Every structure is written in C-alpha cells, then in structure tokens.
Length: 468
Image (cartoon, rainbow, N blue to C red; front, side, top):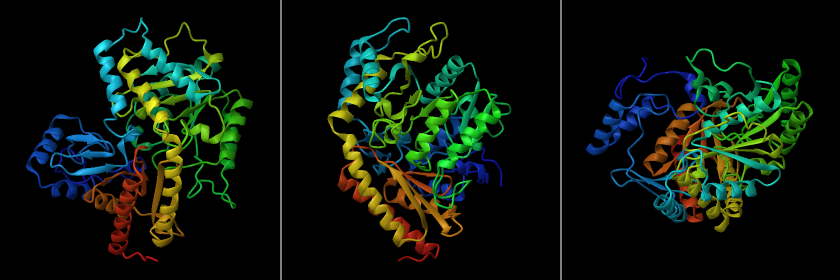
C-alpha cells in the first residue's frame, strides 16, 4: 500500500501508527468519508485536504464541525455527536456560560498583557491554581500549551539537579515538539525524525493487563523497581516524567507503585514530573490525578482542559525550593500571562468547584465501572475494562486468553458509534477510550453507553463472537 498524498489515495499500512490513536488512512476511514452524503461537507473536506499540510492521525479529517454546545459537537448537516474524546479540553463541555462570561468581560477590559507587566487576573489564576494543588506546589509558570509546559519542566530539572538525563515510559505521550517527542515513548511521533534530545532512557509502564513484565499475582510495583535499576545503572538522571494515569489507553497504576516511585526519586535526588495535561482539572475525580495516589510531584504540568474548552493555556507548577532560576528564561512566552487565558482558567476552576463536579465525577465513575464490567461479562470481545473518574478504557481482543488485539473490531465499533452519534478515540488500535465531559447528565451517560453496547453487540455478531 502506498503513502497517502491526497484524500482519495490508497490507505497506508503502518503498524506503529496504532500506538497512539485512530488511523485516518485505513479502508474503513475511506469508506466512512465516502459515505458522507452532503455536498457542503465533502467540499469543505476537500478544501481542507488541499490547503493543510497532511500529517498522521489528522489527515484526512473525519467530518466538518459547525457548532458545539455542552457535551455535543455538531456538523454542517445538523448531526450531533456526544463527544467522549474532545482532545481532553472538554471537562466543562463546550460554551460553558461562566467561562464565556469571564473571557468576554476580560476581552473588553484587558485582552493582552506584554510579558514585562503583570495583571490581576493572571495573579488570581496562579493563586487559585496553587490553592487547588495544595501541599508545597506554590510556584507557577503559564504557557500557551501543554507541550511548552513539559519543556519548561525539563529545563528546570536540568537547572536544579545539574543532570540532563531523563527517564520516561514507553508508550507515553508528552507533546509533539522535538523535546517532547524525545522524552515521549511512542514511535509514531519519532519515526523519521533522526537524532533527538540526548540522555533519555525509557522503561516499561505499569500495565496490569498485558504488561511487558507481568507478575504472577497481578501486582505492578516491580515496574517501579525497574526505575531504580535504570537510575543506578545509568547515573546522571535528573528527572522521571510520567502521567500518573496513562490517558490514551487508560493505564491505572496502583497506589503502591506510585509510592515506590516517589520513594525512589527522593532516594536518588531525581525530580518527579507528573504530566497531567490530559487528565487534570477533575478528570480523575480529584483536581489532579496524583492526588488520587497520595503523592506529590516536584513539578506538575497541566493544560488542555485548563482553558475550559475555550482558550489554549497551560501551566507548570513547582515548589518554592526550586524557585532558583532568576537568571534563566524557563518559558519566556509571548502569552505568558495571557489575561484571556487566565480568565478562562480561573473560570474553569471556579465552575468545577461551584458545581461540585469532583464529587459528581466520582459518582459517575462508579456507574461507568459497574455498567462497563456488566458488558465485559456479556461480551467476550471485551478483554479488559479499566479506568478512574470519567476516564475509561475498554480493550477489545480476538482471544481472551492470548489477549490478541482486535484492531478491525475496534474500528468497526468506532464507526458504528459515530453513525449513531457517539464520538470517542481508539488507542493502541484496540482500546476504546471513553472520556465524557464532567458536566454530563446521568441520562446522557446512559444514552451514550446504550449506543456503545449496541455497537459492541452488532460487531460481535458481524465478527462471529459469542455473547452471554
């Protein structure tokens, strides 16, 4: 099969692209695009294909969007999708009235603040952020996006420790810039990029279902022991960077694993960087996922949902004792203290707090866990269910013993759900990732899971899987 140079070219068969997200160049995707019976939509998709630089997992586009409100995105024909993906910006859904008002008011008053000046909304936002972090995380730098926050954290770790080497996890994602893909663990982002940032060592992630180093009792603490092994063997390690909960295919380590990681980092003077860019702002039922593990990182990176689904803004938060870089520009971004971005972020924190969304998320989590495990018992195509808060992964397999990834079946479930008005992401080629907005009502959640179950049922019949 050939590389895709245009929307109608033959599909590409590159297996490493399965490691991150939906592959946009399979036969199923081409059939989906061709099935869209709307002249305006097809025209806009064609114009998009002709003007934007094509890249993996973005080209060709799935559909065109015209409107977004609450938990829904809507295309030009008026078709609505319940958005269980949202690129992780949609904790508050779309068009949240409190965020819109805060930003609108700020735009009329002070739309931009040159970097050499400060402004009240930026200070208020930083103060509120340190409040919800709690503990010793009380120093903030804002940035225009999560990848930039990761870059600042890596620079600060070098400055504080004097060591430039970093340990990260295979299959991890920390952004798409050259420094971020250097510490990331997904081959689809490094493919063909040549030499990257030196000094990165990767270790296997703590995976309970199909881990690289499975244990007889199903525990995952030994994955943390491998971190210490690498630190001691390699030397010169300044930081360990990881998501507390892996977002895309939803890996949820144990508390014992993270306690062991924290102890190892303390023992060897390695800074622990938690990347909570996709899962922060309440996704786990806590403000930040590390809080569910009763640990505290040395640095926290957040973004995506921080801007309330409206304005791009990210932050790196660290401790007072690391406030030692007065003569180094850690970020130096043009929109470093963006009044509009900070207004959106402050409004997001206020809305989550005022609407009790953290507690609601925990209740919704119990409901989703119960329902998804019911489906697992009924449909053998479901090999594993795992999650936290409103972040759930459903792993589809062709064989529950061998745990063979069900690539075609997962793709079929995706397009059936899209047909029925439910959008989500497929990661690793076979893991259905369900991330609804925190504001979702229970009736909407029931409706979405009914759409999902019907797709699982239909695909099980189509591929001759039994049901119970």
